Length: 132
Image 1 (cartoon, rainbow, N blue to C red):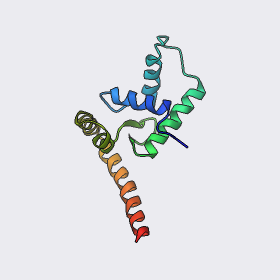
Image 2: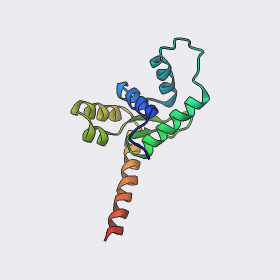
Image 3: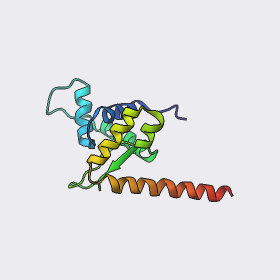
Image 4: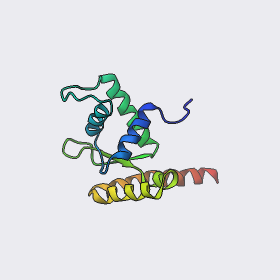
């Protein structure tokens, strides 16, 4: 049973929170190495660590804490940011304003927000109908 976000999830949230723009997974990996004070440009993370970060990122996206913008292909890689609703509920006004500004600066953010709202509004309507 989980007792909150794990180390990898906290690291990803910190990296995304420090960024001033939407951030890709490749950028997260390079920032992780910089955070660990590794200055060798040829150095890569161990495959097990990369897999753990991918699982942590997927968990944060599935729970709605992070939003993924983009199609996920080579030409339009996923870019991640903190969900503005999460920032509004659990953060400060500055964090909320920053999340909104980051989404407004990205052209694909409207599509991502519409998908997110459709997913969670449909789930909420289904849950409410089952309760009746």
